Amino acid sequence: MTGLAELLGAAGQAWFWAGAAIFLRVGALVSMLPAFGERAVPVRIKIVIALAFTAIVAPAVVLGDGAIWRAPPTDFVSFAGVALAETLVGLALGIGIRLFIMAMQTAGSIAAQATSLSQILGGAAVEPIPAMGHLLVMAAMALALMSGLHVGAARMLILSYDVFPPGQALDGADLSQWGLKRVSEAFSLAFSLSAPFIIASVLYNLMLGVINRAMPQLMVAFVGAPVITFGGLALLMVAGPYMLMLWRDELMLFLANPLGAP
Image (cartoon, rainbow, N blue to C red; front, side, top):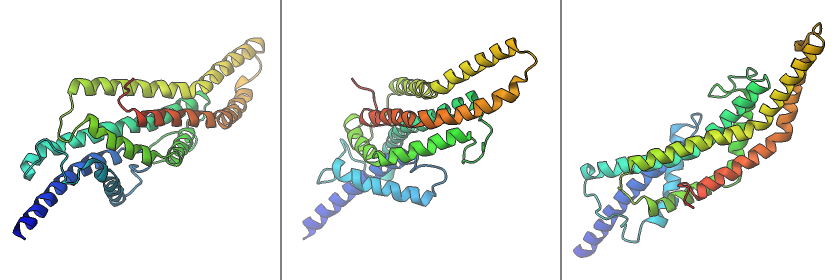
């Protein structure tokens, strides 16, 4: 009976340390996850979401005896290094996903500036972004949830343990190169999404220049302002669905291959 109690105690201790490490990685990612980690979401709700993700990830990662370690920690002091490494891995993956929201925000800001709609309802969101950007971001988050963002995030967390074993510190050089690549790709995606509005703005300004040159007495501003406003809204109605689908495809590709491996 004593041997059984010792065996159960050892297994319980192993499961405790494994669950704590998994929760740190999951919690760091959830804090950056679109829709789940927004500042408008209460902290207690985020903790519950992190616990739910932990309950999904842990059975797929932890073995029957609670072993996911090369050398399991025995106390909180030895667990400190593991906690730091796990938190950094979760934050890195979460920031990689969060950059897609920032790309959509940037695309919306570029589009709004190009169509002179940047000051309409600029403070409607928690973050001061133009109304066009707020609309695109909310639609993008809704589309991501409908497309299985939570499923993709859970799968990415499970597979991350094959690349980043528990307690293994991240290499600073590799992390910086990966981060620079993700930021550059985010800005490239933002510019690609807003390209129709930039092209329309260039054509609009060229047209106004030609009209002003041909008819100097005409107040082109009174003619051009309604045109660019209506044109920007019409272009958003036509190009918005394609922008969201392209954004969704890039997000799902990242969830399937966050490190960009061939």
